[in-house]
Length: 247
Image (tube, rainbow, N blue to C red; front, side, top):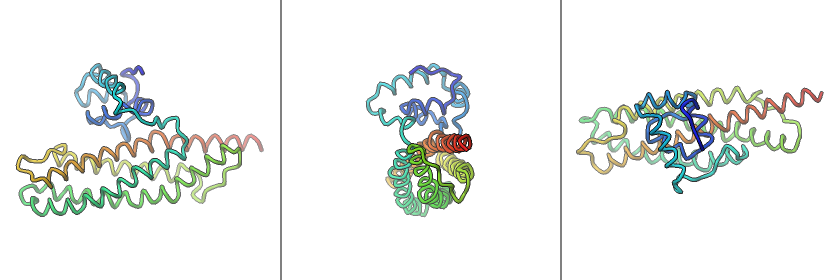
């Protein structure tokens, strides 16, 4: 694929998932902040656009970067993938990292008080994500799946108790912004997940785990913000409009 500096980061990540690893490596936000042009994003991280375009081409040639292009997938498949991979992984890693944070902060917190702040921030992320994921799994995703099935079968959509999808999705998007802000603070406090020279294996493992947690959260949010939610809202709107025209 051919990209240019005027395309948004979001557009590039949606069309070609192999570019996501490049954005991650450069610290470019492609999920919540992905609506800015590539030129602006490159300027912020002080990397020439030409070099980033080269990195895109290199990533596209790597077999390890090939995967499902979710832009063409049914909404039901996207929701299943989010739950099976990203929700399961988030729950698993919160359970794993929380006691590790307790251990490392209790041992090294006096010399590195940022660990205590990181512990509080990560606890807040868990408190944010658990009800968020339940709302998706129990309310929003089932409705999206039912709606898609109705549209494909050319049946009327059964109205949801919450009205339009735009209402719950607006709250979910706000949750994403909050979680992204919390992980950004953790990255800053941890010096971009760089443990001090004297760090023990637990300390090193903690920072590596937090780094991977943020990466997975970015990919999770990208699928929802940039693909699933816009497509679901558009499907709901077009189907309701078509139903009105038929009356």
